Length: 259
Image (cartoon, rainbow, N blue to C red):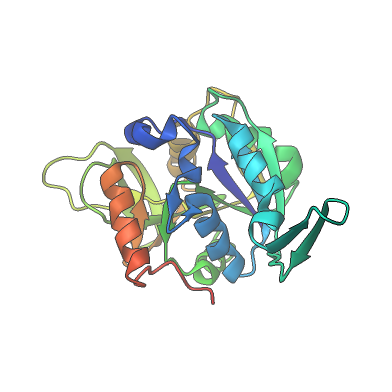
């Protein structure tokens, strides 16, 4: 199953680093957030990636252009004709399509722009700034067993996010609203499974997927929810980055499920 990753936003809340590179390329443990997300999906057998680039897209393209070289031991032999010898190379089982989806395109527009790469098949989608230990096998199974066009993963982090109203009996999202002080409610954590019919709910570049598209689906009772009560963490701020760095540095990163 193909995986679409949104990696084109400006990352204004972590501007200390995002003025140099896209937020998904900010490093945790010496590797970009994007790499962590891709390693996680690959562990579950999903290794065909479509990256929706925008802001500073060249940084992402250059990273993957040099990925093979940077992950290998290399000898440069200048004495014998400037030879480059690659040793013990590390090759990920990935196919990566890097699509420029515009600098100011909204989330729905970015998804719409890669429709030709996705084709007429069910695919996965997530954001390039969040990691989790969600069970992707279980997520896909729930979606396939439902009649929903889209299934999103919901978590309860507290804090600063808009919340979801759920029909608990049917695992459907019924409404979206802003968070109030009293809330300890579910929010959209990404890690979605989408049928190709979802493209019919995206008008163009100005479509905000989380508002226009998902709200239409929820009203039609075609938006499923997979509830995840374990780890999820986004990287919106330097504080968020510090949390992820600490977990990684102490070898306690719940999303590190690969060897």
